[in-house]
Picture 1 (cartoon, rainbow, N blue to C red):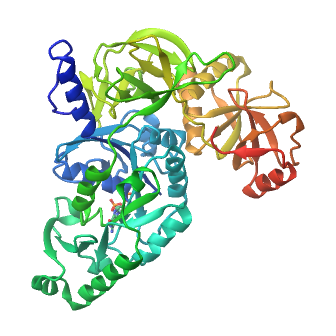
Picture 2: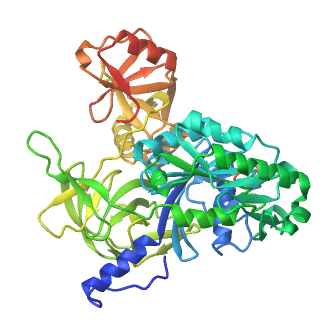
Length: 557
Ligand code: G4P
């Protein structure tokens, strides 16, 4: 945890406590890295740790040859497959700031968790491969950031390899993602000739020096003005002339940066660099802590809702309101010896103290009072018990009865509230699942319900035959393997899984009784009774929409 001054309750005046809380919040940066697999998310995370003084040498986050995280022996399956199924958070410090990085799995383990984790972030870093630009998984993750109004910074990585023209990359970001791109710095040279970045505003050049193989140590950095006579000697006439030309063009045609527009999600500041060689990491990291948002107020719903179901919103100020948080992730089997399960909460307001007694709300209902003992945090993947935490922090609680989206709060007045429900995300893979031994159906139902509560998969039932075996739906195919593995391991149920030929879906908006599904469309209901239409392809979805002009389909419900 942070080494900030701590004030234990009762030992300081309320105004001092509020000042400490305010300072702690102001120095926190809670973010997620969004990237298509292989763009360099893991490498960048390692380098953030390296520049935070947490890793003496890079290569500790991921044992590359083994391809798995250093201490993630949480799940047997994870070991067997050598991949990371889990997503959690790491905390460390950089130049007086407390950094919370939320891990968003990207490979085959891309899942609803990846999306949900983004809801806990105050900003996102989008890593693009300079040779590939905006790729499909980046697009999907960016869409969630947009939906949630999460400001996004862009890091164009792998500038040490032959890549696309920087201007072309900026244009692609704008055209494909629909956000203005504003270059904060610009690459000097490209591929093998990439030596550093030039700051667009100050016209200063940052020229880096290779320090060790694969950037195992910080890169030496020299800062000098473009017109410094030493610049010519350092980077040569050709690169200097090209750079001067590019910067001139940017001054005329580039989008200016505005922090306000960035925080409002209208503009993404763009940085260039190479996570592998550490070129450009430090200026990026410095700018990130400078401009990224600290935890701020969130809107919650007052409980209970009005008799007609209408909800009144309440602004949850991180300083003014007592402790409150919501569960954004449940992680089972983190320690196979204890068979435990952790509920990860994102703190939204107030100071969290170990053993605090909170009210627990589930889907708008008060459930119980509960004491939060044994809270844990993950620092570079080591689990430690913590005594205090602040808004923006992620805390793992031994899970006894929490579900995704639940609110926990110290309620000081009469007004009770819950944090906004988490959206459901559009599944892309579907299957019908059933127990092989029909005698195990009860255990199967129990296990499936429990795993759906943890958000591993969504359960859908046929709208026409609700008694038939359920459909399971997920964002990534690996979730099905996890589901089958866990049903077998934890509930002793072997299952049969039949993939279904759907590839997209949408929650139905409009009267279900007048909806006329096309032959390729299947109508199902989700666990909250909401109708969902399943389609073999985007084309079928569009065709069905055209045939039902009174209805529409939404991707997030
Ligand atoms: P991911 O988490 O986004 O999937 O990507 P990761 O960081 O694992 O990087 C994917 C590959 O790209 C790795 O190579 C990594 O070393 C490389 N890489 C990341 N950043 C840069 C960069 O700035 N420049 C260059 N040249 N390469 C970069 P790999 O061959 O898959 O792994 P390894 O054997 O090199 O460890």
